[in-house]
Image (cartoon, rainbow, N blue to C red; front, side):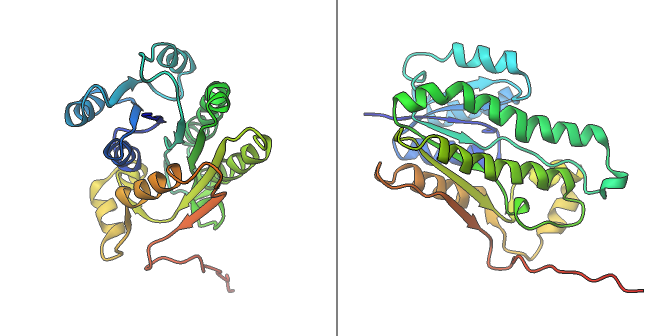
Length: 248
């Protein structure tokens, strides 16, 4: 039986790579995102029988509801939810940060994720499906300028683990994937500059969207009696040591 995944933020990076990896493994995918042309390109590459494009901004609840209601036969029964959509905006310290940037991160990384999850939970429970969320090491290891982004990812990490507790006995598997440095469009969006993004990743040998997608596929295809609660990944060049001391 062909299984169906619902992947948010599928227009680039981890989300796009996840759709490609799952389709290559025999899944159907509902691919969501704001950029219609990129979703259409996915459909063109992988086939309309394998990918259904759902064009909406995850912050728009009415559009989210409409997209779910309009899922066609073959895509309406969701076996796997991949909560991938998320972003970071700004690197300023809290006392200088833009409140609009903070609100955008909360609306995208927190509010949209919990709304979508709640809306799809009844079907996931009925089908004994799975939920995989893309958190971040930023939710565990704080860095200057992380402020609301780090807070939103700490929420994502722990909300996912809380789902694991609440769904005990339902057969639904739940995993929090918490990556470190992954080279995607993420840093370009955060800094507003492709050049700054390239400089940030230069010489670091970062992980790729495909690396995380292969991890998602591995977890999704484990036997039904196995659950990976959480998994943290970093490139070898990155670690979590970062204590600092201010001196007079």
